[in-house]
Image (cartoon, rainbow, N blue to C red):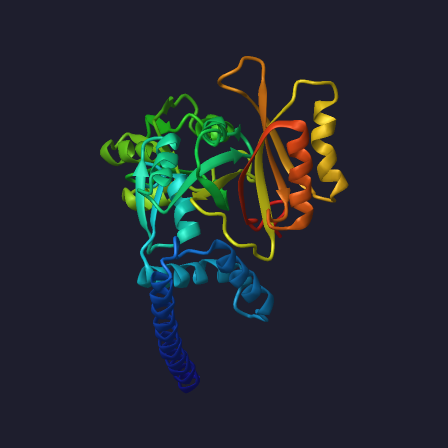
Length: 363
């Protein structure tokens, strides 16, 4: 038995060495790709559609027993490390460190990107518009709290394009320094996070005040400095601030997800599964909504989301944000947009990008 175990371990060690050799071969190819892109003065070294197609293809090829769910995070880090050899990416996001937006960044770009936390969603757009960051990551909607209106409003004036999306399960943990409930006299978290675990807090910490912090990361920072305080935050916040988990997954709704958008300056080339986002204002006339929807029906373009927002410059007038399946380079979508332009005051293509797995239009 011991001889067999030793032989199996030696086999694993040998395979690990071969994997490392292959990773280095891949890295050499990535460096060559980067040199060619620099010679062509490429505007970006990151191609979201190619990365997404690669991960989907590998998941289809996988016959096991390596778990399919592990393919994406493993290859994300391989791609992230390879990109850092071509040209390190600068990514702005709504900070501070250890927020769920930070987690979404790491899920999308891996650990090798350079992350720049900023103080507002508007500042993320500004960083990308002015070239101070290659990409930005911003929240757009949550299954519990609804749409993030500030994100939608910024698209009215920004030249940034949506180049990707990230779906993140929001798992809330109760964190403190000791890992015990006994010392807790107050709980801190972001005002959006507290309602998402209200039932659990009332049942398990009755009478303990729930206090607002500017972010879940700020709540974790407070708990790290106060033995009597606890924070409701994500696992990353606990990791970065050295906190213990009192209880994991205390959210009342287990299907609590936030969708994040990745913004850049160029619409990526089409991939295998695409989504397009549009912004437009309809004309003030009878049947306006019918005329707006008709071009999509006529051209067999499937809509996945539509949201209205009041225009900031004109009272009682609205703009619409629409997501649909397909890439703006496809003829059917081009015809639908042309038809939309005929019945709208204006139409703005916000981006065409790889649809995230787990969202309508993805897998």
